[in-house]
Image (cartoon, rainbow, N blue to C red; front, side, top):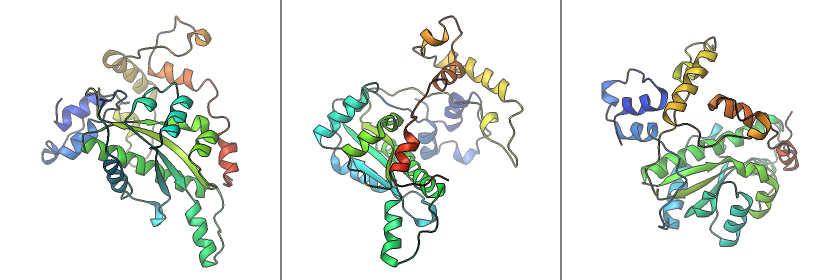
Length: 276
């Protein structure tokens, strides 16, 4: 596996930006650029103290206005792990990973501060939920980077939100605390492969946003993805047809042509959030 930053970015995006010479051998940047999701783990335990250390490192990440609205629930109880694995049976690595954690947004602490200090909570609207969700996502991403620096592999599990009510019950999540994603953690059974991404022309903008070339960017990416990492299976040919050429754009359009998480808004409101 190469550790050259330009080579890694080229493998990811098809082309690489002009990498400054002083960054070419930078190990931290190469590690991030070479990220791979891991879904097969070696039969080796991950020490609880290692997971807790990584959690502390992850929670050192930036947080909106110092509000600190992210929590990590490390799931060690075998019964809870088994229940989550059964719930997420479409993601068998949930049951096979040596360690598992759930990253949550927490607006509960902030509201308690207002009770303790006798000040009104004047921002009871969508931003209260959004800030906590973003904090949790930043902590999740930082945990992934920290875990990979320690030699571990990870795989985020957004499907946990498909079963938000049950997950909240299993983990005793109180009002104003909600799951954002789970994370499988373990020692990789194999190095994994880099997943290609959309070309930088589609996702990096200077001064103003623009997508005049979006259709061409998608076509380029579909071809590059199919050449380097084609999909191993097709999504719902029974609904959309087996004869259609398959690609990333076809897969993602099929995915969101079917309802997903239609109860998520109800769940979030039931946790106490107002989303106006």
